Image (cartoon, rainbow, N blue to C red; front, side):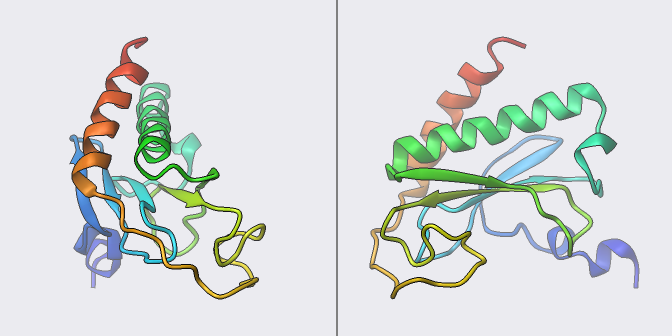
Length: 144
């Protein structure tokens, strides 16, 4: 079995694709506890940020920052967490996670110990998130 065959993010998109270019994609993850949870996935197998050249780093982070901005607009969370863990899959990817003071894990990380029962939250409209993202990305990359 090849690395690509064994890699979940090569075989699957990782969620609903909201946007993509030749280098990376933004996907909306189905997570009822954290509606609007997104991932920005680098398309090639790259383990760490410093494996990218300077232009790749700038591009990836402009997409991450635009995703955060779009999520703040579309979901109105109290906070957005950004995390790049990538210990399991060989794809560099960033988690863009909406957080609310009364969410299941707050103030812990979403992968930590739950503090309370999950509160029902409305789903985030993917089309609205995509529109906010495209606007934010244009603003973010306007300086490049």
